[in-house]
Image 1: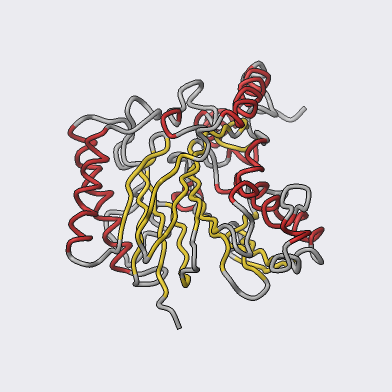
Image 2 (image 1 turned 90 degrees about the vertical axis):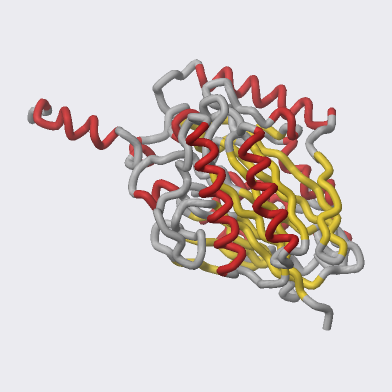
Length: 365
């Protein structure tokens, strides 16, 4: 049996340059130095450091498995070191995703977002790592459904014998801390009933019917961890492609539609998801609109060959143009729904404080 490798993507907002729009190069260099050190010591097989908007993204391969304490501690210490640099430079929101003063064995539950998978490398192992800014983990629900369950998006579901039986979706209820596995195509309508409620039910993983891991998404929500609004969740997603899994083009296809997600300004608005090239991942208009980048890698003996900037393609120009049109339309609503999230979605913002301040002025009618 071939030796398994682990692909870990761990991210955090440790300081914005300027405001929430991007990351200063000194933070990227600090992260690279930390991971280079770990590589020299043999802790990692390979790594790549990048960013999407104001989020620092650590992409690592290793042999320690999912939830490995030594990998999570490395990531945590890297984020702490970058936070110190951010504080010296007076970056905005320095360390805002680090919700604890101490590492507890894993970064899950203390701020950073995590997507990890362990697998045996195939003869060719192409993967796509999606990284988003100014949105929440529920943003992956629609694309993942289309990639792995919609034959109008993914031709392989119809014509590839290895995919024809469908996929299993692991869906988590982030409010009740429960999960359920739903099988497509036979339970498609049950799946849609849940994942259409993107704020509560989120796709965490997708498996082929033979058990092969196909995709893993981060599902950490900062507001649920902290009990208040402390920043956007800005999720990450890993998708394996080709050879019995959806092709690269089938995985990218859903992002040609700029679907509406929650997040944007102060995490309190709906906006269009805009697929952009790496260099365009600098959300500035109303701190947005929400952005997503796609980094393509070939993994060879654990080495990350890449990345290829997969949205740096004029084929996505229309999606970007449409996203700007949708952004205009929604912005005209100002503080009114449906641009602003509903009251139930604002419970972790300053809305409860404002309600408490004015509650004595409410009178029976």
